[in-house]
Image 1 (cartoon, rainbow, N blue to C red):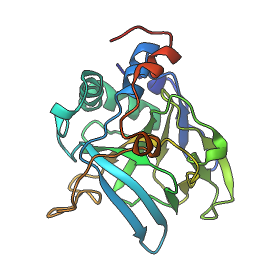
Image 2: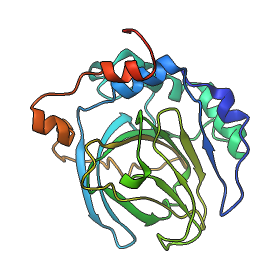
Image 3: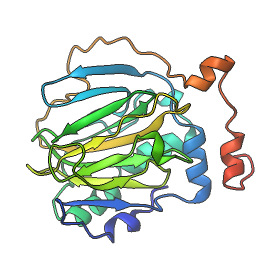
Length: 251
């Protein structure tokens, strides 16, 4: 499903640090399926201020740290199970190693699915030193930049010191090599936005790391995520409109 050549043949930007925007990761058919069948199950709400950043978003495990199969696979569509399989395959690690110039072939990975609903954000921060590389995949079929929700590549910890913005459009992604300069943030999603900003973050960790997202003994209640427009209508919107967007039939 993943077009690994798009990753392996990309060259990292050097300003303001080592990062890359990579698009065209899926065929139109696969992009439509992934957008339409985005997971809604087994999410937890995370909010607070850890001293460096404020944050508010919903998270679900796709691949537990070090796991070789998807979390809660029965809740995932065939397209999403295939994406999880692609992420644990050697080819993906090799492509990311070629992109970054780092040997990631044995690095433990974790993948989490996110909904950033209205009012959600992730303030300017540096990733923890245990995180070597982060690759963020996006899954919105359309997005208005005026609604916020973009990834900000920052020159400093100042949220206004923006070097680049990445919209969360399906097929696009951003890879960040962790350093003491790799400041980034997720802009606050407008309260008026009726859909969530949707992404999966794949993190390559140092050996022996423990997941900060799912620490041992975590008993946070899990729930289904519902967009504001679905709350108002009382039912989920049909996925057919996403397929129409790409001019596809049923899958």
